[in-house]
Length: 216
Image (cartoon, rainbow, N blue to C red; front, side, top):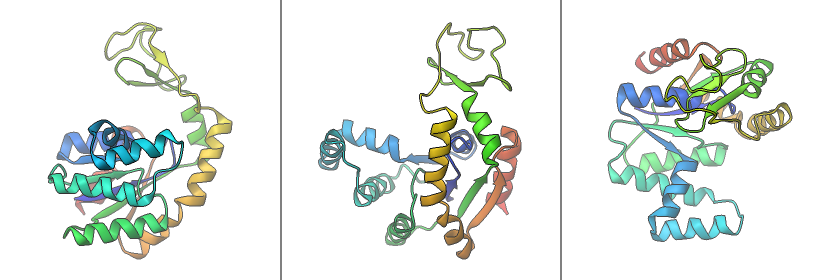
């Protein structure tokens, strides 16, 4: 299956994508990861990306579509794709649909991870991660069992917080999401592809809702 995970920053899209990768062998196509890989590849497209980002300019939709096309052509996505961070706008959604049509593929589901904004802000502003293994913690809901020691890998004093995991930054990121990306909810609803889950449930509860939405 080829799917899109939609939801504001901090809704848990990355966590749910990892579960789908483990359970179904799907490939996560993250815009950020693809851009970093392209720069390191030394390909013609990669050099173009490197030059654009070195200038501080935004990478065009055309280039991102080109990176997605490369991944689809490589056969890496044989068991299905999770689109992460793309599309963000209606023109991008149109471009992705055209690309999939050209490759003889289709989009099967769009999962909207819906959240309460105030609850989301409380979740995000309290989170921190292990700098060694990436395990996620929270000031209130998930403290490490031993203060300063990662439960998963045992690293000591390696915890870090994202600079933008604060209320002011989160409200700005939410504003940008609702302005730019929320129109996609109506777009994919009209196509009969949209399914909505509660993005603020426990991880396994959300995963179960997503499984149900994909398997119905």
